[in-house]
Length: 393
Image (cartoon, rainbow, N blue to C red; front, top):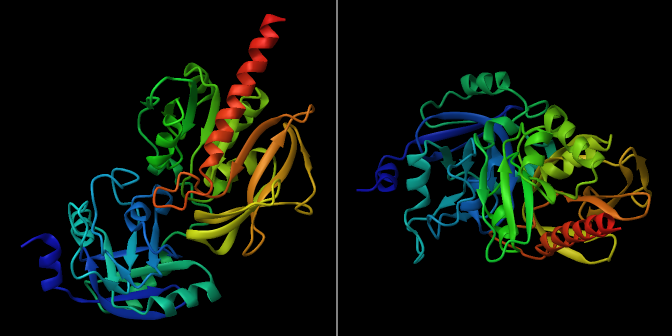
């Protein structure tokens, strides 16, 4: 009998307790035990394996709004990192069996093997509505005790996501290289703040050799790669608490090295420019968020996972002067007008850096924003051309 079958046969009562005291009761799902984290919800109807293995979910308990989870099992190809990062998992109805020719195990097999505590059989619709109204908050799950008061005390003593510097907990311990696919055209230094495996792959597909560096990388390490451009990845935690990456990015901007950032990288660019960031009430998480590119008017459906955002100090249509050039809002979320992208131009009006708050690599889809990797390629190519012409002159 496999691990998931054993777990189903011995499924026990479980409780979920939010920090405001609300209690949900259900049954164990995954490993037996107790866990705490920040309760957030994801609206994706597919891509649960990519969600679970996204380092941006460090210390978060993810509530899936789709009612049936685990239908296609898990496989060895779709993981975005080498482990599951969520602190806990909440589903309404786990799949009784998994059905996919690509599956190598059931989802519950994976949860049990990696020690991820979850709960099933709860009203995730009601839980999601509660989080939308009250905001993301700390939460605990237990399948070893039904004492809600005791669990509530543990939850209220657990750390908040505000002020949490987590990039160092999820970054690579050593630099590594993702080779270009086909002929090498360019080199990128990618700072791993919680990078997803698909991201360097998307660049490699475009002939880019990607040097992935730890979150505490220095300017000297970036220069040593011979990079034509610098990339900052997604990642977990409070951007206001992640100061080393901001300092590095300011050095990169001073050298006018082309820069592209996504998700946490967008927040790092905002803070490097001198802007503030703030915590959203319940964040954007899922694969169905509408974003408008303000430069073209085009609307894209995008994949998100963020609980913080950049605070724009003036009207969204105004530019802001910074020590590194004029900054502007390039993208905005159509649901709530949250800043979803930034761009920086020099005195000649040339693009120096840009970023988006969402995930253009989107392994589980949608793929509307994949063209941003082409934009980064074009930016680096143009910079290299200008540098070469300047040398010739």
